[in-house]
Length: 391
Length: 218
Ligand code: B12
View 1 (tube, chains in turn brown, orange):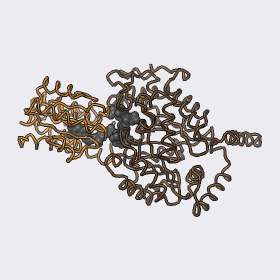
View 2: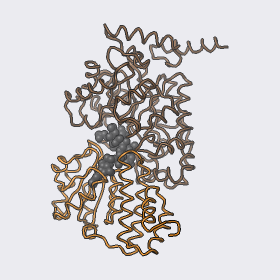
View 3: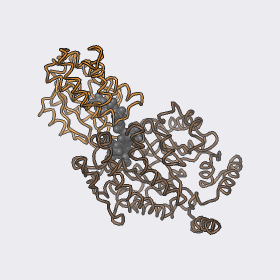
View 4: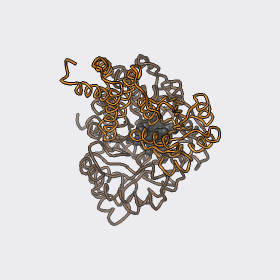
């Protein structure tokens, strides 16, 4: 029986490799992954590694030739293909083209399709504004959830008709094919509390979390049901990692025990699904005082991308000591710096991060959150250059 | 007062209801202190101490954003009740009407909500224009509510520039108006260059900053 299972797993690895795509890392035997990482780490001391070797070495917590990086550039690159904000959000071929152009022209090893924050909410029926000169956002004058009793009335939509989520799947499909073995494309999914927040409006939602947790949980359950299909569909098109945005597990959301009560079981289901399918779980959270301990307990992530320090650490060195051997750390260049620093200054900031976090592998250099949508891309190039030069 | 050893203990318990966002207990204790004959000024002071304590906890990560918002609700609820029972406002609060909003192109309204609630909790009359507010809507708000203070929030690096035209137009049409600004990417220098009379970093400093500009006649 176990050989049948093993053979099946090996098939799941070989099939994508034959298409020159990244297989689900969870199905590659540990001994092979570690062997590749150890060998790459040694080779990295004398020669350049490929993007994939660098990522695998990093994910196995070994030191590559230099740290891998991601510029986290999304709609900020729209002008590279003369596209508008609404086109970036709504036309998957254009979105994929923009993200691929960033990969080719700016560099970095990891491609993360954080298109905008209203994808899932839009499919559940929230009215969204698509401005010409900014990222889409919900029309808060017409929230879908008008009243606490509405959480239970959210419609469990048919995923086949979820236009915006389907378009993310399409973006992933195109990118996985185009990038092949030259990098890793991750999937993307907002967690249920944040989706409900988009459909209720922040103020009222916060109050509901505290005053009507059962109603909020009922909403989470309906939303998660659909998210499971969304995640499955992204895995079907071959992404080896899914990134989950878990903003509410931070000081910008609700207190730790309440987060665990409200969202814990749902994010646990989502991450179990990812792991069961051999893929990796990445967490993104740009809140202040993130609950690393709870997130690790409920989601067992391989990667955490963060903007601000967790609630139990007072600097990056402490963070590395406490959590560095449990997860790969990704971050945490302040996005404010990107707005006002010169590329040289950005490279200096990156050097500091590398000094604090890169020792022993397990670090990906990146901004703490999406590269600000209206900035020139010089500082994005500086991040990638810093990784190559100082990492 | 039966549950409390002294009037001071009762007042401390009252101010703690804010931290526990316990509206029911707040009302109960408010009734008790009024019965005790405590002056509205003293009650208000205690409520403000409760609010300060919540504010300092949010700064040290002991309180989440969600909890802080409900603490503010409780504080406002209490202060409104005290106002009904006849407390006097100070001159600055009485003489000023504030119009507040988030600039166009920016949907981040939590910072603004907190500032708005703090003003309200401290007894100011405030009119909320919401988020993604155009220059015209700000001007209309000032005119309609006869505002003396314009409070503007911008939470993104990219939306911060939209503050300048609002202040420029507002001062042109309403020379008496004082502008106070804030937000994640704002700072003293930027605020001055946009023509603001004051910048405030957060909820902790906003009341003091507002009183300073109004007392200095700007
Ligand atoms: C919560 C949040 C959201 C929520 C907003 C919910 C809401 N209704 O407010 C949601 C999820 C909707 C959201 C959406 C987006 N967001 Co957002 N978001 C955040 C986050 C995590 C927290 C912001 C916040 O609410 N802070 C809490 C308040 C209380 O913060 P505060 O600054 O401490 O507030 C104090 C002071 O600023 C001051 N203050 C504020 N206003 C005023 C006004 C006056 C008069 C005074 C005196 C003082 C004052 O007092 C406040 C209280 O003490 C930040 C990252 C972070 N960690 O900061 C990103 C962040 C602000 N978002 C960002 C982005 C890019 C977006 C999106 C564009 C993403 C996307 N691609 O779709 C969208 C917006 C869509 C659009 N078209 O613009 C960026 C902005 C980057 C930039 N260019 O500046 C940030 C910085 C994240 C990042 N990339 O690094 N976001």
